[in-house]
Image 1: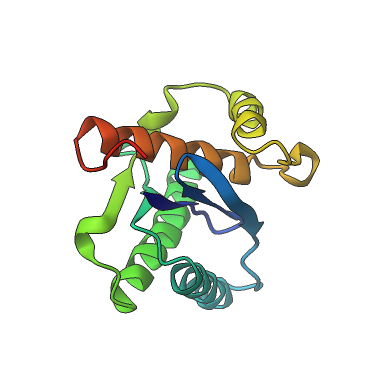
Image 2: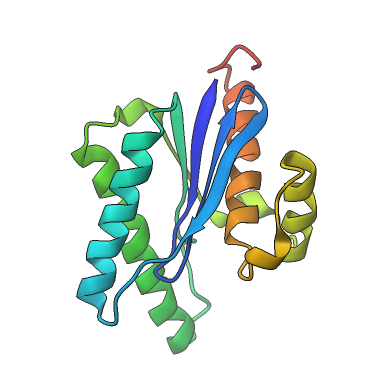
Length: 162
């Protein structure tokens, strides 16, 4: 079983590819542009490149939480984050990614653990993971998201345990 995991935002997109319990590749893509429009185009290009290059069995995409705790700045950030997620999902559908292979996981999969905990786990899952290059823990989140998605599929009986 293979999974492309994507942790999107408007500033950095963490991604990882899980092949048979091993992270084969991972990284961070930084959307370019000074305006929202330029960032949207950049996010589309990044998503297209990832979905085209990695034709995995499944794609796991982290989606926004349902609430923002009522703070204006957080709500605005949530809207931009939601836009990035929407672009990623739209791209998947646009290039013909089968709907049944898309897994949408809200942030509750993180179980309120601090981001630093995911960097530690990422190093276990991918020994050459470089924390110093992952300032926002985006790659670490994607690596751990891939493993969480694999466990979710196993629990649902949708994979053979690989």
